[in-house]
Amino acid sequence: MPLIIGQINLPPYIRAMQMMTLANFYSRVLKRNYYLDIYIPDSGLDQAYFFLFNDGQILDDIRLLPVLQSWEERGIPVFAVGIHASDHRLQDYGVSGIPDYKQRGAQAGEYKHLIVAELLPYLKQVFRIMPEPDRSAIIGFSLGGLSALDIGWSHPEIFTQVGVFSGSFWWRSKAFSPTHPDAHRIMHERLSRSFYKPGMRFWFQTGTDDESSDRNNNGVIDSIDDTQDVIRVLESLGYENGKDIAYLEIAGGRHEPGTWADAFPQLIQWIINKTSYAK
Image 1 (cartoon, one colour):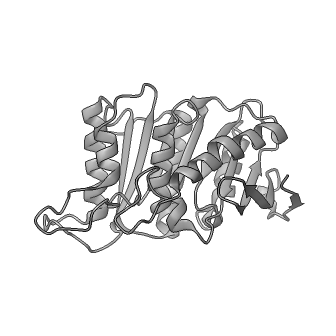
Image 2 (spheres, rainbow, N blue to C red; image 1 turned 90 degrees about the vertical axis):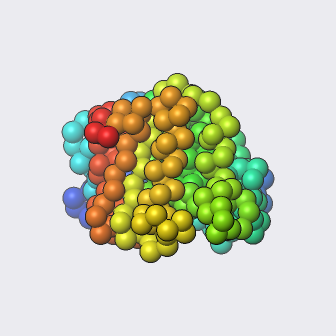
Image 3 (cartoon, rainbow, N blue to C red; image 1 turned 45 degrees about the horizontal axis):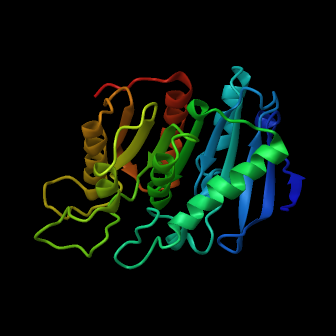
C-alpha cells in the first residue's frame, strides 16, 4: 500500500487546499512505482469534480493550485490527481494496443490498466471518492495528451471529458512517407473506426509556435493540422464542434508549460460551466 507522506507547506493564497504526495504508488501490471500529487479540496469531496492529469510533474508550472483555489472559493471543489511521468514515459504514453513505428507506446495498455484498475480503486478506497463521469476529466500535455484521449475514449463510463494541450497526434504506425504525409496516424485511425459515444466532450489547445514542421506543405504546422484532423474525425462520428468539441488556438503559443498555464483556466471553465465555444 502506498504511503501518504506529508502535507506540503503552501503559500497563503492557497492555504485552504491540501496537497499530498504518494511517493511509491506501485503498479503491479507495470512493476514499478509512480509518484502522485493529490490535491484535496478543503470543503470536502462529496460533490467535487475529479481531474486526473498525465505529466503531473508540471502541475506547478501550469499554476494548478491557484486555479483550483479560485473555484473552491466559489463553492466548486475539485479533487485532482497528477501522475508524474516515469522514466518509461515513451512506453507508458501512446495509444493502447498499437505501438508507433519505433515501438514506442508499447505499454500504453498497461498504463491504462494502472489508471482504471489500480489507481482509481485505490482513490475510492482511501479518499472515499465516487466521481460521476460527467464531473470527471482526464487531461494531458503533448504525448500525455494523446494518452489522455486514448484513455478517455476507451472509458467514457469513467471520464466523459478530455482535455488535450498540444497533443502528439502525429503518432504513427508507419514511418513518414512524403507521398502519403498524413497516413498512418494512430489516433485518427482508431477514432475513424469507432462510433459516437454519448455524453463525451473534448477540449483541444494548440499554439501557432508549437513547432515549425509542416510535413504536407499546406502552410499549417503539424500540431494544428493533426489536432484539427482529430476534430474532423470526431465531427464525422456525430460530435458537434462548439458544443461537444472546443478548440483553442493561441497565437504565439509554444509547446511548453508557460503557454499551457495561460490556457488552463479556460479548460476548467469549459469543464465546470459547460461553456460552448464558437466554431
